Length: 309
Image (cartoon, rainbow, N blue to C red):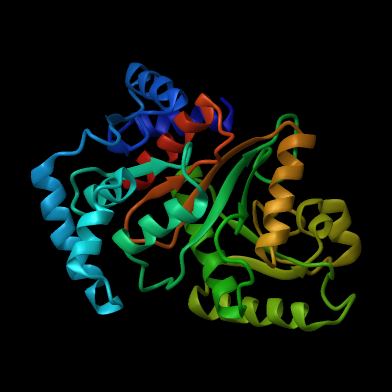
């Protein structure tokens, strides 16, 4: 059973309710049918003009209470809850849904903003980021071809502490969704001192922070990607690495590298890229690429359902 089939099977084991606030998109409607038919999750499918007025009013009051200290007015809260994105996010916050998935017809900043403002950032992690679950055919690296790549969608240039928190939150995702032991590599253009620079110093600081925050985590850096995922190269470049060239969670030094990296692997290796999955929040949500397929939506819903279990 490949990793995508395993994810769908795990989602079916304990049904959760996922909000899909983009009924106007034909791909989302088709995905909802498949999700219901296969028993992957219960789906709440809606869009503009379909929102419950009483719940809109309640959610607007709750949203105002959440954001008034940030300068949000009641009128602005009422206006925000006309948007199905914010409605879905507040549904999730209020446990009227277990998670939400959107982005087929919205940008990543729009989805991330609604998720962060409504769901709130996990105080342990203190930063929201995103990742892709990559499933690479005929690949022996990672976890039988499965990897998590982060951050690929939200944090442009993380500082050392943010990088450490991104590593920890994505390691937790790997354990929760894939059921694997996370082996985390902080990627760089250098392997253990083969080059110098401020970016490398940041990565080393992030490594120290991550180890302090979560002592049992299998994490190493700075590592070039071949030293992180190819055992033979790891043996040559850094034989003392904890990972031994078997990393399955790859943490990129910045958003530019992460976004380029996942798209190269997706297109050139014909990999499945599930996500962006938003991590570091109090409740589960997933973004979608606006170029997503129906299958991408189904798999994002499955991942979100597992996270809610």
